[in-house]
Image 1 (cartoon, one colour):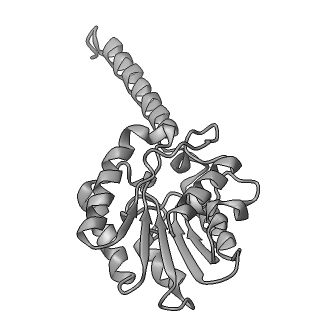
Image 2 (cartoon, rainbow, N blue to C red):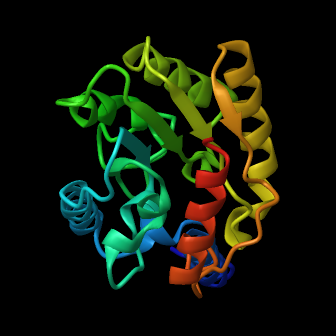
Image 3 (cartoon, helix red, strand yellow):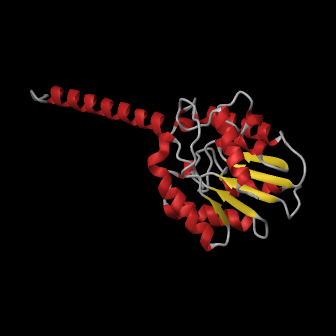
Length: 231
């Protein structure tokens, strides 16, 4: 037989659980909009298709350049992904961008899409002296230092012997509170391993309403800013 307090207690627990689920949903939407778009499988399929399409858009002329990056490189949110920031770089620019990916293996939930995991395929067909620009870090905001370090070292193992420039995360408003830690860690790792690091922490850029991805003007500004630092 149920006691007099059983039903109210269950109702209280139910209300509390519902409130917790709503709060968690809000956190996911605000902090990780890329991870909350459509179903998990649909999102990953879309990101893979976008990545493949952007990889097919080789731009410019001259010395080959490979950009390995995240949604900023892939052009997520742009009407024309081919206008993402790497198009502003000098040379014959190839792009291997995958939305949601990062240095750490678990930055994305879409499988083996970290920078290190995608680097071998991205390098295929490129000469050994091609410059490799690695852009990212925003999706490593919730990964531990150990995870980021492991991913960074895995990437450098694949890129051994090549010219590498690492461009760190800018202070996108939705993740600004977490960027400084990632930036400092990447700077330390690059310095310890003899790799050029470019901090984008203080770059002023234009963002879409999600406060994470760049506007067309933001892509142009970021691309020009990176290009100026590759000389």
